[in-house]
Amino acid sequence: MTTNQKFNFRNYVKNTSLTVGVNPVIFSVSEDKLKVLLATFDPRLKKSLPGGAILKNENADDAANRVLQETTGLESIFLKQFHVFSEPDRFSYATVYNELHEESYKPPEDIDIPDRVFTIGYFALVNFDTVHPTGGIINVMSEWVDIDTIPELMYDHNLIIDEALSSLRKELFFEPIGYNLLPEKFTMPELQRIYEIILDKPLTRSNFQRKMLNWGIYERLGERKEGVSHKRPFLYRFDKERYDKAIKTGINFCL
Amino acid sequence: MTTNQKFNFRNYVKNTSLTVGVNPVIFSVSEDKLKVLLATFDPRLKKSLPGGAILKNENADDAANRVLQETTGLESIFLKQFHVFSEPDRFSYATVYNELHEESYKPPEDIDIPDRVFTIGYFALVNFDTVHPTGGIINVMSEWVDIDTIPELMYDHNLIIDEALSSLRKELFFEPIGYNLLPEKFTMPELQRIYEIILDKPLTRSNFQRKMLNWGIYERLGERKEGVSHKRPFLYRFDKERYDKAIKTGINFCL
Image 1: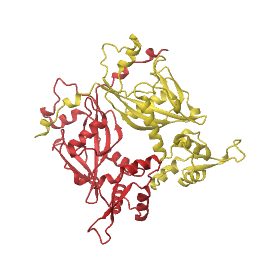
Image 2: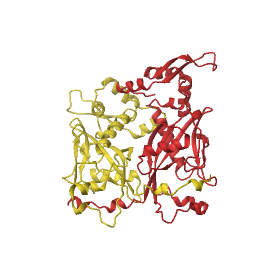
Image 3: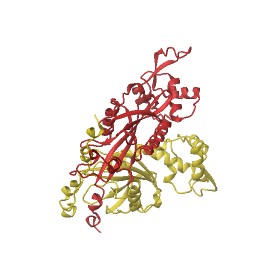
Image 4: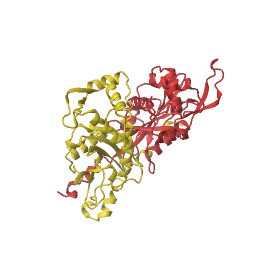
């Protein structure tokens, strides 16, 4: 049996009526709560994650960064691809039109709307105070919602958030990423609180701080945090150079 | 500004001439070497990873499992999605035709060949002795190649293998997956050797065994391994039930 007898181009076009998009799950911490940025496409519809299609000449990361920039105003955010959502029936452009029966939501006749849409899930970590949520290109608005009070969302977006949170928690156990949720300068108690909020459980202060400091990737600054307590804890900042060195030595950052 | 004014269906069709495939990087260990299963689409072309398009009514995992089953004959292999490769210029169906100028490789006129193909990278771990490599549907053959002697492959498949190996090494640091490369019954020295081959560095025997046994997920069998040394080490097997229990207790499997 020769290759060309076995190979069938038609296998490759069966699913070409396909678009691939990205949906970043943007996490932040405020008022001691883990929050997710939710978008509103139309006030009459369920909320959704921010997202968009991967456009010509973009790769998946380009698209995710563009959507993040559109919705948060921020560039170079911590962003990690975690899973592709590809169920055959996960998404349908008809949904929106059928729910609203509005011509403006009906695809123009000359456009062949894909019958399948995959989405690549990302999670992003941002410092709450630096974000000024907007609707981006597609949505009218976006807003922060507590992880505990996420409503029923469009399509499979509740599932995407659940998987994003699992991935974030797993990643936090072996990568020092928590500082991305804090201002540039932070105290060890502030960093520990971030871990406790994400993992939803208390951690032993002494163990936590010993680990963080043993990694040698946080630079202790001369300054101390003022006015939080009589203790005036030291301020630290993440040191990328030391981190890269530590990686080379094969250190593992297991919590 | 209202939603429908901002929303543009054309953003969603710019890239609908798109196919998404899967490329499993199938790892195994034999003769003390980490090996990868490489496929041959046509003996006159560079080798490649096994792969295929995600077909109608399949999700990504279905397609990956189908390709694995086609190329290895095995079902229910350890399989993990690790990254989507989406560079705009990563793949072109024209490549094959242009290199061979053979009508059999020219897409039929009536087929609109996608101008972009994304692929979802998976890594799989299999016990060498259970695999009988075949070409599957698309390729004429597949064969095991040492990770150190991988030739230049088609498209970006060398990059996909590099990323698969990094993901496998990272995963090995926090998930007990190494046993998937061994027969059902194995000794602790055999398991340690798997870790050493993948991580490409020696591990301390006492530390390694203490960790593995502390996790409590390997059942020690009554039998001992015969004829390997005068020591006759105990045989173990992975215990899924104990593993699931351990997960619930929030144990972390950091190496």
